[in-house]
Length: 353
Image (tube, rainbow, N blue to C red; front, side, top):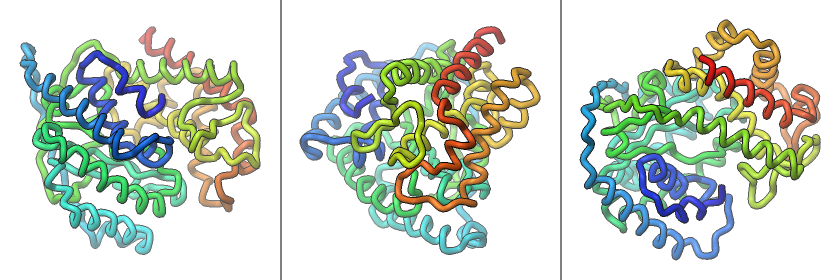
């Protein structure tokens, strides 16, 4: 979906507002997608965000939600920079930049999770995953909404020098999200393994166990994109500066960023499967459990060969944004059609669980 499309939605609910906020502050909307006028669009969309947030804040929930307290450890800079010192120092400089720009004026919690936090990243492949909670005071102030976006515009320019394939911005929530934590948001298991750049923190979430299944919805949306892409031979998801991923996949094409983004989604299938079947789990542990539970060899073989791209990336040279031959040799030129079949099978497994 293009940046402005979310802001054409007139309906207001928490899920849509969260998507609007994440698109507004996303690296794609700020750096990758063409805009007529950055300042004009920032102001226009900031007004919508403030108005929507104010409207939802006035709604009082009648459902009493159970609170969960999550303790977040502080960033230990010495331990963090012990391995791959030069690489880690680049991240520490990014954190310092955010603090110097007064990020704490806008953000209540700033946690790092994923492979950077668990220290099992693959250099040149792994991206930067966060759990960032904006303050109510930020979302209710037009100047604050815009100033934060301008800070992130500079931040992302710096981040791309460290995380070359960064295909998403900060993963953002609000205080409103914490007070009604929807199914499909970041699993608490991942949050418990994170660290905060603000120091040791305690985060309280009020989990909503409603029937809304965001993970299943995500799979269905991706299936739709794949069906449309296969039909048109052009995959319109995570296009890079207007360039879409051509189907079938061909080596030598300047489309590795687009393919990387899709591979990243397919590697989320185990955690999406467990979340959609009401079983929260940390992504790192999800693969082993997924392989032992899912008996369909076509599914498990597909995920394993996709995992192989991530695991073996550091062994190969990468030129510009071209799709390497070894990648196509491993996943096959019909990878996108296979992706569609796998997602269809996973959706059936979820519905039959």
